[in-house]
Length: 515
Image (cartoon, rainbow, N blue to C red; front, side):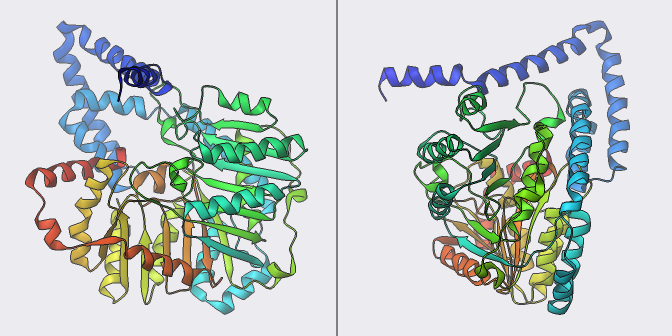
């Protein structure tokens, strides 16, 4: 690297949005701690006060109806380092903004409930097909807010590039509207091609809407890029713009990946809108990702899911019924059941976790899982244990080249436990970002939900549940093909780890709900 390039890169880092935000956050922390420690003559009494508060908070947290891992991650520092942990807890549990977002989101979900009613004919078919599937469908309808659909074709994409090519083709066909909701939008070849089409369609009178997450796209787009897109005719909003304020609302990110075109086609999966997802940028070796394309009735769930989030940040009225899908004979003859569903951190229902537990518990022959982050809670570990011990072939593929070193370290802390229970673990030769479950060639989920605390409890997520659509065997074959480029992890590999590596993993695992 020559000197000119070095100084340009350094300047870009120093004057980036991310650097500015980090500095502002650090300034807030320094200011708060200096206020506490500034009055040196009262330091001893302040320490006693914060220690007492830490003990009270620890008891309070232990009695909350939250995940046990989250409790442990707070209780240990509150008792061990109360002077810092107590202050951090009060800062990060600032719920004013979260309460407002929860109220608005609940209002939007209540408003759209009449448009997401379960068809009685589908319910009858479910009861005849599979009583266990009927129970899951009833749960997702009553507590998730999304009905089960028939008359839907599913096409599975085993790579980000295949999904990208299909999405470009469908975007060019758009005549009425394009709705896109993504965690990450990053400048590059992928986004450039998509943006060109979106601008052309907006100029032609197509209703083009884009929403991206304020944290996911931080430092990947120019400042106030949403304004630039609006000037080009694209209706654009940043969901939960990241501000340098110490508040818990920053934990609730929009991690969804949704694209709906004319109400008839929908895309979902792990693929964001940035070059690494189609391997036009090499970050962690080959980037393995997956997605699905739906046509038919199930697209309606994604249309309404998008509008529920959109209307939180935009008051523009929508004629919902005008956005419904129009079926072709192909969709009318489609077999199986499809349930696109969302998961919100602003309610008490852990929909994503419940669906995963249902798949594991109802597996009879095999359950194959791909996830970039393996940090399962006790409930998921117990479900995997029962499945493996009852003779189900349980296999999990994780990245061999991680995007976050500490996530792989935490994953390794689970490897020995899972291997001893009978679960087979593999590491992919590259980075695997796919979030797939497939079982018995009948049941599958492709979506955005990782096996970590953030996805299961803190983020807005979505996924597509499939049963008997014909796409499921293809998802299994893709898993088996991915195994050919993966290394199986054994107990001997766990034994070869150094004591320091074990120690780091153990500490990180304890605090994983807070990372």
